[in-house]
Image (cartoon, rainbow, N blue to C red; front, side, top):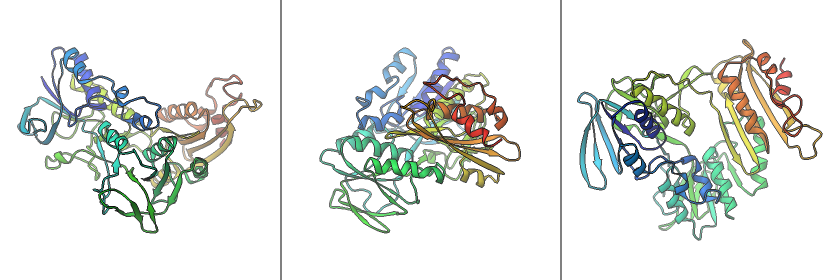
Length: 442
């Protein structure tokens, strides 16, 4: 059995290792467009801030380990341009050797990930314009930081906020330009003041309801122009989302979403025989929406890769789906979310209600307690909990994981109130803040 995997990072190498462990004498070829395998992309912003010493700390396994220990034909600088689904051939170019290749496969996994979107701004080609997705992206950005004092981040989502924090730590001035009326729009509007106050507290300039129209400078960035203002700046970082790397499959008849994400079933199979897909280039089944969604996160990529590898090796394994859990640190705050926001709930036409509660991370009589802001969303027709948001300096991570577990198992507000959660005064109140919130809904 000849296995070919396109992509050598999270999903691709998770799958490859499952094949190695479950299929004796497997013939595996992996094709990576860059020259770095199996690294933690989510850790990249923290190299800038100094919490991660250097980029090689992010590499889980190097190429030689895959080749020598596991017998994988791990290739680098392989640009896949086409898949012949009838002849079962992967075609492309070896960028180092500057020659074309054709590789036959019995089973193929597409794990090509996604690429950052840099909008078609006038001046986007100037030196000092960056995006962050890979180690080479980071190295290019950090090499360019010398002499840079003022940085403009376009986009106020996860990457934008993480970059803002880590760049502020280095002593630079940072502004975020966001076309919406608030940053962190994945959270509901009533949680926004907490996030905006934290940005202001740490000196992040927020430029809201503005859209970038052009970048100006002579060879290098000197200013960024929006539909409202012009800002002098030394660097522009696009943090405006990612696009699945699937254009090379567009003429194959493969089913994809409008954004290019490959539609897969629970076994990571595409609609084309012997072809699977996983990770940031594929869809994820959303357990609450009950639709194929696109939520590109490292956790999903690793899980989907593992499931794909088991199925490729002949062991039937279904991906159980996601509930939409995410978390990030923004200076002193932890911002955590799971399930649906109010906007997402309304878009699904679910009947719902919400409850908001302000408690503390530990017993309320402790002097060092920290405020914890909790919001829970539940369906009024079934009482099933379908979403939650928790923001605070301490304890938000613990609570969001409890909520995510409840959502995964479709618990009702009554079920949630009955949970036997841990209690000791240095860790919690006798009623956890989540249950305090839930009790207000019953």
